[in-house]
Image 1 (cartoon, rainbow, N blue to C red):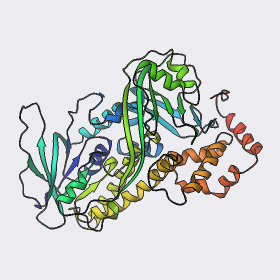
Image 2: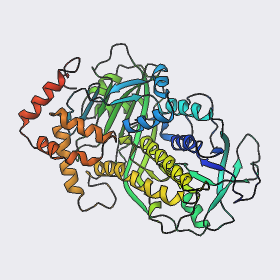
Image 3: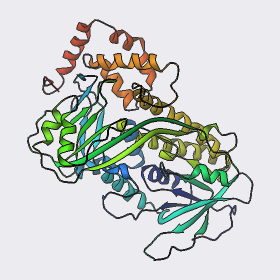
Image 4: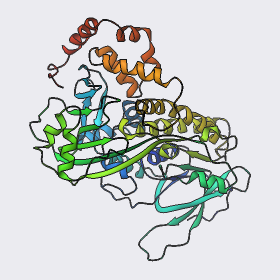
Amino acid sequence: MSTEKAGSGFDRAIVIGASMAGLLAARVLSQHFAEVVVVERDELCDNPDHRKGVPQGRHAHALLCQGQAIMAELFPGLFEDLVAGGAQRVDMGAQAAWLHFGKWKARHRSGLASYYQSRPFLEWKVRQRVKAIANVRFIRGDVVRLLAAESSDKIGGALIRPRGDAAVAPEPSPMYADLVADASGRASHMPRWLEELGYEKPRESQVRINGGYATRLYRRPATVPFERQVVILYPNPPYTCRIGYIFPIEGDRWLVTLGSRFADYPPTDEDGFLAYAKSLDAPDIYDAIRVGEPLSDIVGNRFKANRWRHYEQLARFPQGLVVMGDALCSFNPAYGQGMTTCALEAQALDMCLGKAAAGGTRSARVLADRFRRQAGDIVKTPWLLATSEDFRYAQTEGKRPFWMSALTWYTRKIHQRSALDSVVYGAFLRVMQMVDPPTRLFRLSIVRRIFSPAGVAEQSTKVALTKVTSAQPERR
């Protein structure tokens, strides 16, 4: 490891964590720094195996369309490679069956395609591409603390303890850098590290749901018991709260995830898992897996709360430091926003670095404040989308904005009309996929359709269905 003095002005960036946020950060930083060092505590094998440091990795994941677009630009050919390896490309309007509020969404060709694969497979393919970048290197270790630079109010690097097979852990040693990016996830130590350097801890917003998930892999049969490729069963708030997913993934497999809120955790035994699937608001997932061929054990995971650490609100913040991914804000995993939010943050980081370079500095001295403000703006939309759904339940703990009841009333109308009107559903899909801002749903043309007579909406859906290869089944 380097033993250069902090603040010596060499051009290195350190990334803490090699999950999706860290990999995307490393890809962007490689364009601006002579060297990028990714520090990861897990051993990174050259295969798509599950990693201990990503406990949610075994469960259902979605990469939204906006995230796909950014990642396709960062990694040309990535999605072609994923499909070649068995990932499934799915039109979210025509090939995904989605039940919500007791109604199936209107079927139509949306033009919004999502790619379905396991999280470890996607992460492995991205990691292969990052590892191939000449000025990026990975080391296995733990970041013990941050190092202050000789100049005031700047991070100069990190103290790192290598990991390995030695019986006695080696002593940590310093690595100096112009920029440190914290992508270490929900367990980030950044608030404590900042306190150790004399800064305030960020204020936290929490919306507690005490959620839990259980997942099992099944062989995907040649003839499936439903017409579409993806099945999503959401509840009918506030009366039910259990959810279920069937996603097609690489290896001709189904990834089946069940979950709920408020400590209503799905069982991880055979009979309990099946009974839980049977209790969902529609029988589709149960009918599929009760005769399916299991390929794995049932694994569980729990998620306590949506949490946003408000670094953007700190009056004083060190230069040469950025925080991103779940280390900044983690959402209810049910909505699949995490990876796309990371991609948007990486895009913002790239733009901030470009502006810093154009302004005549390569030391990232003006980067931290600019990025944390932009990252705070990025987080606002997925935070609103996630917490507004969670706040449909009285049991959800957290500060409710005074306007939340009006918003959940209106969005319930959107969901209900989405069962009849493909135009409304298409607009909602674009917002959900983070392609369009939520304001799209408040346009006069959409409001009129939401409150129009049912016959008008039904006619628009019939027109949309003529563009799909076959009509929507009665239940799905």
